[in-house]
Structure formats: structure tokens, C-alpha cells
Length: 253
Image (cartoon, rainbow, N blue to C red; front, side, top):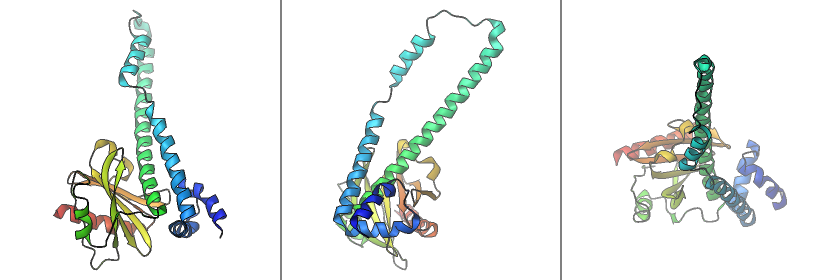
């Protein structure tokens, strides 16, 4: 298949619209073709720039309060008692709407966070140099992060498992520095992201359970003050096996 036909699939790949049967072949092509990998990287960066721009212009709490005061305050209007039932129903409906909007906003923010993690993983797969420290030895990879991120973590022993540690690099999410570790199992790559735990980094629907998103399996949890994200195009049992190894290593630290 020519690069032109691969290029046609890159946008669909980023948007998780590529058929499952084509994903492995496209992953392999991106790892071997510098032109298509660069194209995928550029489109992902553009998507992140547009997404970031959309979040810059969010009304502040002070602005919302000024609008509320001008809309409802100082009018001197009073609700006549005979209108109280209708007013109560209206207030209840408004509360329900606000709760629903808050829930939807939290869901949207979680989905955006999940999409950002997926983008980081795809960018790593598409990059010609996805890791900065190349080693299968956890005693080499872990010390490399000292002084580069503001926390430490432990890595699991992979002897007698099918997982292979490829290496790692420093990455950022919401401008917070963290570690990205790349693992491989049967030619499939899994990214493990570790950050200091913060409320804004939580992804509710993936908390402690595996979900499927954008053709990837994904899980997130906290342990010892750190936030873990694990994502890859592997089956659920393989992803869960690696998650269990990471949990055990974190508890043993």
C-alpha cells in the first residue's frame, strides 16, 4: 500500500475511525515511514493547539458572579405567595439542569483528558524517537528520571513475564511533568504515564477499571500519591497483567 493511501487514513486513525483490522498495519507503517509519522505528529499537534485554544476563554467565577448580580440582584422584585408553587418547581428544574450540566461538564473534561492521553500515546508510536532513555533494565531507566521530574517511582520486575521494558522519557500533561514508560508485548506497545496525583488529572470512568477508547484499552488509578495511566492496543487481560505488576511494584516501594 502506497504512502498516499496511508496518509488518507491518518486523520481517521487519530479520530479512532480506522477499522480494527487496519490498526496493526498502520501502526507498523508509522514506525517505519518517517514521512507518515511526521504527518501524524503534525496533525496531532494541530489538534492539541486547537483544543488548548478552546479552553483559554472560559468565564471566570468573578465574571459569572457579576452577570448573576446584574441579572437577579437589586431589582427589588418579590415573588407573590400565590406564585410560590410555580417558583418552587422552576427552582427545582433549574437545580436539576445545573446538576446535569455539572455532570456533563465533568464527563466532557474526563473525555478530553482521556483523549489527551491517547494523543500522547499515538505521538509516541508515530515518533522516530519515542523514548529518551533506551533500556530494558529498570535499574537503568528509573535512575534516569532523578532530577528530571519532582517525584520517584518504582518499576516492576519483568522476569518470567512476556513484557519487555523499552525505555522512557519525560512528558507533560496539563503542564505537569511526569514519566512515560514504554513496554512491549508480542509486538504491541503499551504506554505507562506516571504523574503526581492531582484532582484535575482524574478520569472518573477509568478509575480502577479497564475501558475501551479510540481502539485502545485504558486504565487509571492512584497509588502512594501518584497517578497512573496505562494505555495500549492490547487485549484486556494483557493490560490488566501489566497494571497488576505496576501496582505491586508501587506498593513495595
